[in-house]
Amino acid sequence: MPRTAKPLVALVAVGALLTGCGGSSGANSPSGTSGSSGSSSATSSTAVAGTINVFAAASLQKAFTTLGSQFERKNPGTKVVFNFGPSSGLAEQISQGAPADVFASASTKTMDQVVTSGDAASPTDFVTNTMEIAVPPDNPAGITSVADLAKKGVKVALCQTDVPCGATALTVFQNAKVHVTPVTEEIDVKATLGKVSLGEVDAGVVYVTDVRAAGTSVKGIEIPSDVNASTTYPIATLTSSKNKATAKAFVDYVLSPDGLAALTASGFSKP
Amino acid sequence: MPWPLALTALVTIAFLLVPLVGLVIRAPWRNLGHVLAETQVVEALRLSLVCASAATVLSLVFGVPLAWVLARARFRGHGLLRALVTLPLVLPPVVGGVALLLAFGRRGIVGQYLDSWFGLTLPFTTLGVVVAETFVAMPFLVVTVEGAFRSADRGYEEAAATLGASRLTVFRHVTLPLVAPSLVAGSVLCWARALGEFGATITFAGNFPGRTQTMPIAVYLALERDPKAAIALSLVLLAVSVAVLVGLRDRWLHTGPTA
Image (cartoon, rainbow over the protein chains, first blue to last red):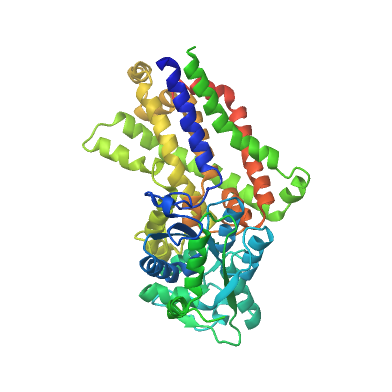
């Protein structure tokens, strides 16, 4: 008997690995939605407890991390696990079955895709964000306006056009009637900001909130409101959530006066 | 053959092949031609092939002498040096990309002089892609060739030397032909690794169509916009990889034991 037991154990183990990994590619969360450390028993359909996975746009990283720990303090027994990234990439992960309970997108377009595919219903717009030019602290190319970004020899990093920060930056250029050719189209807004703070580019177009969150590592050049563009952030619980009560409680907290106060403190505007 | 081994091997085969089968089954065969005719795809494929080949040539030129030194020279700190130069084998590629920026970026410890003395900046250029791919892929060639140098029969070299050949002549006409199979194997490994390189490339060289957007980056970006296109692109990379492995199969199999 022992001779046959070993390969069976190996088979079961491989099977568990295969099913356990199915569909969770790209998600950072160490566990499924049912939570870890024995909290799954507390996760009934009505109780606000257990772990939720929140997929949120990269630009929300700082504000949501703060909100997450505030929410955990107010609701003992809960744990909020974040997966920050480009909105379009997160939407793709959700449609591939990644274990997410809440999705906060940096554009209504990306949220609409998730709603259309049936993964979310009735999203709420909770904040808007405008664009700003970020330059290295010493502003090597002497950037003062949007038009300066179109000058020859100025190295500009933008977000790729499929993510909201890239699409919104293009709207700014259209409004300002300039044509900007970037040296790189980065995956998301944090990658764009990183190229600026490392001094690899002369300027990047990112969100107002990113410039504020970056502190002294970059300098912000304001874009006048007549050419600036904004993007609207919707949030929704996901239909596949296994912890709907906690997911809804988190969304409610984001929409509460406390939540909005934390977001506006980061530079977001009310919709 | 003991059946537990055979059974486990079957599971392994399934594990390795099922994802590839998925790619083939889900591929948008009907509009495959349409997707692949897009200029951006053609550019990404061309860029990938050119950069991976350039990285392999650089790895041969600079990696073979290093492999020879590691295999033949004896000096203090030999083991440490060997570990350090083969570190990119295990280093997460994104970390490699960050490290390259800090070294050869516009404000990097070496890069700032490249910029101020020669006006040369590597990030966001095709040359930057080649540098990133070389950094990540060269160690595959170095370890393969180093093993061959180590196991090559020194008797031939000594015979050539007693017949009056200079040391460089011995190296070129005796040692190199001895390790030729491993050179091929190492080059293939290196080329394949460079072709698939993603993390270091996007971190160091960024993403711009036609200049730094290689196939793996195009696949990643397409997955967010148009998953069907991403599958089509993946299929192309798969076909290229299979073609290379099949094309070099005979030499590859021969070199197996000696490499």
